Length: 389
Image (cartoon, rainbow, N blue to C red; front, side, top):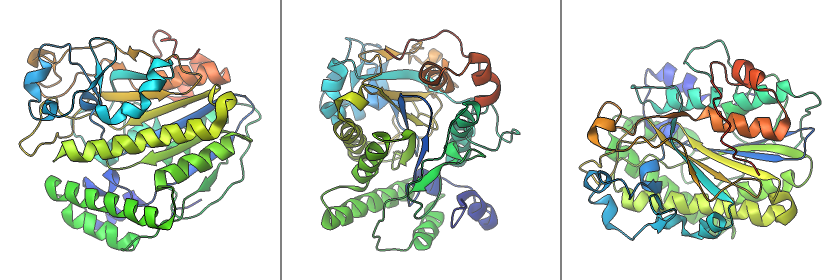
Protein backbone atom coordinates (compact mmCIF):
# COMPACT_ATOMS: atom_id res chain seq x y z
CA UNK A 1 0.00 0.00 0.00
CA UNK A 2 1.42 3.36 -1.00
CA UNK A 3 1.43 6.20 1.48
CA UNK A 4 -0.29 9.45 0.45
CA UNK A 5 2.99 11.31 0.83
CA UNK A 6 6.28 9.46 1.09
CA UNK A 7 8.34 11.33 3.68
CA UNK A 8 11.77 10.68 2.17
CA UNK A 9 10.69 11.52 -1.40
CA UNK A 10 9.00 14.66 -0.12
CA UNK A 11 12.20 15.86 1.51
CA UNK A 12 14.41 14.89 -1.37
CA UNK A 13 12.16 16.83 -3.72
CA UNK A 14 12.40 19.73 -1.30
CA UNK A 15 16.18 19.49 -1.22
CA UNK A 16 16.17 19.12 2.55
CA UNK A 17 17.00 16.29 4.93
CA UNK A 18 16.45 17.55 8.44
CA UNK A 19 15.50 16.70 11.96
CA UNK A 20 11.86 17.52 12.22
CA UNK A 21 9.75 15.25 10.03
CA UNK A 22 11.47 12.05 11.03
CA UNK A 23 11.46 13.00 14.67
CA UNK A 24 7.74 13.70 14.76
CA UNK A 25 5.75 12.00 11.99
CA UNK A 26 2.27 13.44 11.88
CA UNK A 27 0.28 10.22 11.70
CA UNK A 28 1.13 7.00 13.50
CA UNK A 29 0.26 3.85 11.55
CA UNK A 30 -0.04 0.41 13.09
CA UNK A 31 0.49 -2.75 11.03
CA UNK A 32 -0.50 -6.32 11.77
CA UNK A 33 0.38 -9.74 10.45
CA UNK A 34 -1.08 -13.13 11.30
CA UNK A 35 1.42 -15.96 11.80
CA UNK A 36 1.44 -19.71 12.50
CA UNK A 37 2.86 -19.53 16.03
CA UNK A 38 1.28 -18.73 19.36
CA UNK A 39 3.59 -16.06 20.77
CA UNK A 40 2.89 -12.34 20.20
CA UNK A 41 5.52 -9.77 19.23
CA UNK A 42 4.90 -6.02 19.52
CA UNK A 43 7.54 -3.69 18.08
CA UNK A 44 7.36 0.00 19.00
CA UNK A 45 9.58 2.44 17.11
CA UNK A 46 10.41 5.43 19.34
CA UNK A 47 10.99 8.18 16.79
CA UNK A 48 13.33 11.04 17.57
CA UNK A 49 16.19 9.39 19.45
CA UNK A 50 15.26 8.41 23.02
CA UNK A 51 17.77 9.43 25.68
CA UNK A 52 18.57 6.06 27.21
CA UNK A 53 20.91 7.64 29.76
CA UNK A 54 17.97 9.54 31.23
CA UNK A 55 15.45 6.71 30.98
CA UNK A 56 17.73 4.20 32.73
CA UNK A 57 20.38 6.17 34.58
CA UNK A 58 23.72 4.64 35.56
CA UNK A 59 23.65 6.28 38.98
CA UNK A 60 26.30 3.85 40.21
CA UNK A 61 28.81 5.11 37.63
CA UNK A 62 30.97 7.74 39.38
CA UNK A 63 31.29 9.80 36.18
CA UNK A 64 27.57 10.10 35.52
CA UNK A 65 26.55 12.87 37.92
CA UNK A 66 28.98 15.43 36.51
CA UNK A 67 27.69 14.92 32.95
CA UNK A 68 24.13 15.98 33.77
CA UNK A 69 23.87 18.21 36.83
CA UNK A 70 20.62 19.88 35.72
CA UNK A 71 18.89 16.81 34.33
CA UNK A 72 19.75 14.88 37.50
CA UNK A 73 18.40 17.61 39.77
CA UNK A 74 14.73 16.70 39.40
CA UNK A 75 12.72 14.02 41.18
CA UNK A 76 14.74 11.01 42.27
CA UNK A 77 14.82 8.06 39.86
CA UNK A 78 13.51 4.63 40.84
CA UNK A 79 16.19 2.18 41.89
CA UNK A 80 16.36 -0.94 39.74
CA UNK A 81 19.37 -2.94 40.88
CA UNK A 82 21.55 -0.66 42.97
CA UNK A 83 23.51 0.55 39.94
CA UNK A 84 20.84 1.55 37.42
CA UNK A 85 17.76 3.65 38.24
CA UNK A 86 14.64 4.24 36.13
CA UNK A 87 13.23 7.66 35.24
CA UNK A 88 10.42 8.54 37.67
CA UNK A 89 8.01 9.11 34.76
CA UNK A 90 8.08 5.33 34.23
CA UNK A 91 6.91 4.76 37.79
CA UNK A 92 3.67 3.19 36.60
CA UNK A 93 5.78 0.35 35.16
CA UNK A 94 7.58 -0.40 38.41
CA UNK A 95 5.17 -3.26 39.25
CA UNK A 96 6.09 -4.86 35.92
CA UNK A 97 9.78 -4.61 36.80
CA UNK A 98 9.10 -6.23 40.16
CA UNK A 99 7.07 -8.97 38.48
CA UNK A 100 9.89 -9.68 36.01
CA UNK A 101 7.85 -8.34 33.06
CA UNK A 102 9.98 -5.28 32.30
CA UNK A 103 13.62 -5.15 31.33
CA UNK A 104 16.11 -3.04 29.41
CA UNK A 105 19.10 -3.52 27.12
CA UNK A 106 21.63 -0.72 27.51
CA UNK A 107 24.42 0.59 25.25
CA UNK A 108 22.95 -0.81 22.02
CA UNK A 109 22.77 0.76 18.59
CA UNK A 110 22.28 0.05 14.93
CA UNK A 111 25.45 0.00 12.80
CA UNK A 112 24.73 3.66 11.95
CA UNK A 113 27.50 6.03 13.02
CA UNK A 114 28.50 9.68 13.16
CA UNK A 115 26.09 11.55 10.85
CA UNK A 116 23.19 11.29 13.34
CA UNK A 117 20.35 11.93 10.91
CA UNK A 118 16.87 10.90 12.08
CA UNK A 119 15.89 9.74 8.60
CA UNK A 120 19.00 7.65 8.01
CA UNK A 121 18.95 6.30 11.54
CA UNK A 122 15.29 5.27 11.32
CA UNK A 123 15.73 3.82 7.86
CA UNK A 124 18.59 1.62 9.06
CA UNK A 125 16.70 0.64 12.21
CA UNK A 126 13.60 -0.42 10.27
CA UNK A 127 15.48 -1.99 7.36
CA UNK A 128 17.54 -4.07 9.79
CA UNK A 129 20.60 -4.01 7.55
CA UNK A 130 24.17 -3.19 8.49
CA UNK A 131 24.60 -0.27 6.10
CA UNK A 132 22.55 2.41 4.37
CA UNK A 133 21.80 1.83 0.70
CA UNK A 134 22.05 -1.95 0.95
CA UNK A 135 20.17 -4.18 -1.47
CA UNK A 136 17.48 -5.02 1.10
CA UNK A 137 14.61 -2.59 0.53
CA UNK A 138 12.08 -4.18 2.86
CA UNK A 139 11.80 -4.22 6.63
CA UNK A 140 13.10 -6.87 8.99
CA UNK A 141 9.69 -7.82 10.33
CA UNK A 142 8.47 -8.38 6.77
CA UNK A 143 11.50 -10.56 6.04
CA UNK A 144 10.64 -12.58 9.15
CA UNK A 145 7.19 -13.26 7.68
CA UNK A 146 8.82 -14.29 4.40
CA UNK A 147 10.97 -16.82 6.27
CA UNK A 148 8.11 -18.49 8.18
CA UNK A 149 5.96 -20.91 6.17
CA UNK A 150 2.24 -20.37 6.56
CA UNK A 151 2.28 -16.67 7.48
CA UNK A 152 -0.80 -14.89 6.13
CA UNK A 153 -2.15 -11.35 6.11
CA UNK A 154 -4.53 -10.29 8.85
CA UNK A 155 -7.23 -8.13 7.36
CA UNK A 156 -7.84 -5.01 9.47
CA UNK A 157 -8.15 -1.34 8.52
CA UNK A 158 -6.15 0.79 6.10
CA UNK A 159 -6.70 4.45 6.95
CA UNK A 160 -4.29 7.37 6.51
CA UNK A 161 -0.55 7.14 5.97
CA UNK A 162 1.63 4.04 5.85
CA UNK A 163 4.90 5.05 7.47
CA UNK A 164 6.33 1.83 8.90
CA UNK A 165 9.18 0.50 6.81
CA UNK A 166 9.83 -2.24 9.36
CA UNK A 167 6.81 -4.15 7.94
CA UNK A 168 7.25 -3.12 4.30
CA UNK A 169 7.95 -5.89 1.82
CA UNK A 170 6.52 -8.64 -0.34
CA UNK A 171 4.81 -10.46 2.55
CA UNK A 172 1.29 -9.11 2.76
CA UNK A 173 0.28 -7.26 5.94
CA UNK A 174 -2.73 -5.13 6.88
CA UNK A 175 -2.65 -1.51 8.00
CA UNK A 176 -4.79 0.64 10.27
CA UNK A 177 -4.37 4.23 11.41
CA UNK A 178 -6.42 5.86 14.17
CA UNK A 179 -8.45 8.83 13.02
CA UNK A 180 -7.10 12.10 14.38
CA UNK A 181 -8.47 15.61 14.31
CA UNK A 182 -5.78 18.23 13.83
CA UNK A 183 -5.93 21.97 13.61
CA UNK A 184 -3.48 22.02 10.71
CA UNK A 185 -3.55 19.69 7.75
CA UNK A 186 -0.78 17.12 7.51
CA UNK A 187 0.80 19.04 4.63
CA UNK A 188 0.76 22.29 6.65
CA UNK A 189 2.41 20.57 9.58
CA UNK A 190 5.09 19.12 7.35
CA UNK A 191 5.76 22.54 5.86
CA UNK A 192 6.03 24.05 9.35
CA UNK A 193 8.47 21.31 10.32
CA UNK A 194 10.56 21.96 7.21
CA UNK A 195 10.79 25.65 8.05
CA UNK A 196 12.06 24.79 11.54
CA UNK A 197 14.33 21.90 10.60
CA UNK A 198 17.65 23.75 10.89
CA UNK A 199 16.93 25.07 14.38
CA UNK A 200 16.88 22.25 16.98
CA UNK A 201 15.36 24.49 19.68
CA UNK A 202 12.51 25.73 17.48
CA UNK A 203 11.94 22.24 16.14
CA UNK A 204 11.70 20.78 19.63
CA UNK A 205 9.27 23.49 20.69
CA UNK A 206 7.13 22.88 17.59
CA UNK A 207 7.12 19.13 18.22
CA UNK A 208 6.14 19.70 21.85
CA UNK A 209 3.29 22.01 20.84
CA UNK A 210 1.93 19.51 18.31
CA UNK A 211 2.16 16.68 20.84
CA UNK A 212 0.30 18.71 23.45
CA UNK A 213 -2.40 19.90 21.04
CA UNK A 214 -2.95 16.36 19.80
CA UNK A 215 -3.41 15.18 23.37
CA UNK A 216 -5.91 17.92 24.11
CA UNK A 217 -7.84 17.18 20.92
CA UNK A 218 -7.93 13.48 21.72
CA UNK A 219 -9.11 14.14 25.27
CA UNK A 220 -11.98 16.25 23.96
CA UNK A 221 -12.91 13.62 21.41
CA UNK A 222 -12.76 10.52 23.62
CA UNK A 223 -11.41 9.22 26.86
CA UNK A 224 -8.58 7.44 25.06
CA UNK A 225 -5.46 9.29 23.95
CA UNK A 226 -4.12 8.41 20.49
CA UNK A 227 -1.39 6.08 21.78
CA UNK A 228 -3.93 4.27 23.96
CA UNK A 229 -6.27 3.90 20.98
CA UNK A 230 -3.42 2.32 19.02
CA UNK A 231 -2.54 -0.02 21.91
CA UNK A 232 -6.18 -1.00 22.45
CA UNK A 233 -6.72 -1.80 18.78
CA UNK A 234 -3.44 -3.74 18.70
CA UNK A 235 -4.48 -5.78 21.74
CA UNK A 236 -7.86 -6.57 20.16
CA UNK A 237 -6.19 -7.94 17.04
CA UNK A 238 -3.47 -9.81 18.96
CA UNK A 239 -6.11 -11.57 21.02
CA UNK A 240 -7.39 -13.01 17.74
CA UNK A 241 -5.35 -14.01 14.66
CA UNK A 242 -2.62 -11.38 14.63
CA UNK A 243 0.74 -12.35 16.06
CA UNK A 244 2.84 -9.32 15.17
CA UNK A 245 2.03 -5.64 15.69
CA UNK A 246 4.28 -2.69 14.95
CA UNK A 247 3.68 1.00 15.51
CA UNK A 248 5.55 4.15 16.44
CA UNK A 249 5.48 6.67 19.24
CA UNK A 250 6.76 10.15 18.50
CA UNK A 251 8.28 13.09 20.36
CA UNK A 252 11.61 11.69 21.63
CA UNK A 253 13.80 14.46 20.17
CA UNK A 254 14.79 16.34 23.33
CA UNK A 255 17.19 19.11 22.29
CA UNK A 256 15.77 21.48 24.90
CA UNK A 257 13.79 21.41 28.15
CA UNK A 258 14.21 17.66 28.43
CA UNK A 259 12.92 17.71 32.00
CA UNK A 260 9.53 18.72 30.58
CA UNK A 261 9.35 16.87 27.28
CA UNK A 262 10.78 13.48 28.21
CA UNK A 263 8.37 12.76 31.11
CA UNK A 264 5.41 13.37 28.79
CA UNK A 265 6.49 10.80 26.22
CA UNK A 266 7.62 8.34 28.90
CA UNK A 267 4.18 8.53 30.45
CA UNK A 268 2.67 7.87 27.01
CA UNK A 269 4.95 4.85 26.62
CA UNK A 270 3.91 3.60 30.06
CA UNK A 271 0.24 4.04 29.21
CA UNK A 272 0.76 2.21 25.92
CA UNK A 273 2.36 -0.79 27.60
CA UNK A 274 -0.21 -0.93 30.39
CA UNK A 275 -3.07 -0.66 27.90
CA UNK A 276 -1.59 -3.58 25.97
CA UNK A 277 -1.29 -5.63 29.17
CA UNK A 278 -4.79 -4.83 30.39
CA UNK A 279 -6.52 -5.37 27.06
CA UNK A 280 -4.60 -8.50 26.12
CA UNK A 281 -5.62 -10.19 29.35
CA UNK A 282 -3.45 -12.39 31.55
CA UNK A 283 -3.33 -15.40 29.23
CA UNK A 284 -2.28 -13.58 26.04
CA UNK A 285 -0.01 -11.11 27.90
CA UNK A 286 1.83 -14.17 29.19
CA UNK A 287 2.69 -15.04 25.57
CA UNK A 288 3.66 -11.49 24.57
CA UNK A 289 6.99 -9.71 24.13
CA UNK A 290 7.02 -5.93 23.62
CA UNK A 291 10.18 -4.38 22.17
CA UNK A 292 10.61 -0.59 22.11
CA UNK A 293 13.60 0.66 20.13
CA UNK A 294 14.92 3.98 18.83
CA UNK A 295 17.20 5.10 16.01
CA UNK A 296 20.04 6.32 18.23
CA UNK A 297 20.75 7.60 21.73
CA UNK A 298 21.77 11.07 22.79
CA UNK A 299 24.89 12.85 23.99
CA UNK A 300 26.26 11.85 27.38
CA UNK A 301 26.48 15.51 28.43
CA UNK A 302 23.49 17.78 28.73
CA UNK A 303 23.58 20.85 26.50
CA UNK A 304 23.11 24.52 27.35
CA UNK A 305 19.34 24.50 26.75
CA UNK A 306 18.49 21.80 29.24
CA UNK A 307 18.45 19.01 26.68
CA UNK A 308 20.67 16.53 24.88
CA UNK A 309 21.71 16.24 21.25
CA UNK A 310 21.84 13.34 18.80
CA UNK A 311 24.17 10.60 19.96
CA UNK A 312 25.07 6.98 19.26
CA UNK A 313 24.32 4.13 21.69
CA UNK A 314 20.90 4.05 23.28
CA UNK A 315 18.45 1.85 25.14
CA UNK A 316 15.98 -0.89 24.25
CA UNK A 317 12.95 -1.48 26.45
CA UNK A 318 11.45 -4.95 26.83
CA UNK A 319 8.14 -5.82 28.40
CA UNK A 320 5.54 -8.58 28.43
CA UNK A 321 4.57 -11.68 30.30
CA UNK A 322 6.93 -13.75 28.12
CA UNK A 323 9.97 -11.54 28.90
CA UNK A 324 12.57 -12.50 31.47
CA UNK A 325 12.62 -9.02 32.98
CA UNK A 326 13.81 -7.47 36.20
CA UNK A 327 17.24 -7.00 34.63
CA UNK A 328 19.28 -4.44 32.70
CA UNK A 329 20.97 -6.42 29.94
CA UNK A 330 24.01 -5.40 27.94
CA UNK A 331 27.73 -4.85 28.32
CA UNK A 332 27.98 -1.57 30.19
CA UNK A 333 30.90 0.55 28.85
CA UNK A 334 30.92 3.31 31.49
CA UNK A 335 30.59 7.04 30.93
CA UNK A 336 34.00 8.37 31.85
CA UNK A 337 35.32 10.64 29.12
CA UNK A 338 37.78 8.01 27.92
CA UNK A 339 34.96 5.45 27.69
CA UNK A 340 32.67 7.58 25.53
CA UNK A 341 32.31 7.17 21.79
CA UNK A 342 34.14 10.08 20.18
CA UNK A 343 34.30 11.49 23.75
CA UNK A 344 30.67 12.60 23.48
CA UNK A 345 28.27 9.63 23.26
CA UNK A 346 27.58 6.43 25.12
CA UNK A 347 29.79 3.78 23.54
CA UNK A 348 27.82 1.09 21.65
CA UNK A 349 28.73 -2.35 22.95
CA UNK A 350 25.87 -4.29 21.40
CA UNK A 351 23.89 -4.41 18.16
CA UNK A 352 20.25 -3.45 18.75
CA UNK A 353 19.25 -6.04 16.16
CA UNK A 354 20.61 -8.95 18.19
CA UNK A 355 18.08 -8.91 21.07
CA UNK A 356 15.24 -8.64 18.53
CA UNK A 357 16.71 -11.56 16.60
CA UNK A 358 17.00 -13.76 19.69
CA UNK A 359 13.39 -13.00 20.58
CA UNK A 360 12.23 -13.94 17.08
CA UNK A 361 14.26 -17.14 17.13
CA UNK A 362 12.71 -18.21 20.43
CA UNK A 363 9.19 -17.20 19.40
CA UNK A 364 9.09 -18.55 15.85
CA UNK A 365 11.83 -21.16 15.55
CA UNK A 366 13.60 -19.33 12.71
CA UNK A 367 17.18 -20.56 12.51
CA UNK A 368 20.11 -18.37 13.50
CA UNK A 369 21.69 -18.55 10.05
CA UNK A 370 18.47 -17.22 8.50
CA UNK A 371 18.38 -14.38 11.01
CA UNK A 372 22.00 -13.43 10.32
CA UNK A 373 21.88 -13.70 6.53
CA UNK A 374 18.32 -12.85 5.49
CA UNK A 375 16.40 -11.06 8.21
CA UNK A 376 19.27 -9.01 9.65
CA UNK A 377 22.00 -9.13 6.96
CA UNK A 378 25.45 -8.75 8.47
CA UNK A 379 24.35 -9.42 12.05
CA UNK A 380 26.49 -11.49 14.40
CA UNK A 381 23.96 -12.98 16.82
CA UNK A 382 26.55 -13.60 19.51
CA UNK A 383 25.55 -15.31 22.75
CA UNK A 384 21.91 -15.91 23.60
CA UNK A 385 20.99 -13.42 26.35
CA UNK A 386 17.97 -15.50 27.38
CA UNK A 387 15.39 -12.74 27.07
CA UNK A 388 12.34 -15.05 26.96
CA UNK A 389 11.05 -17.27 29.75
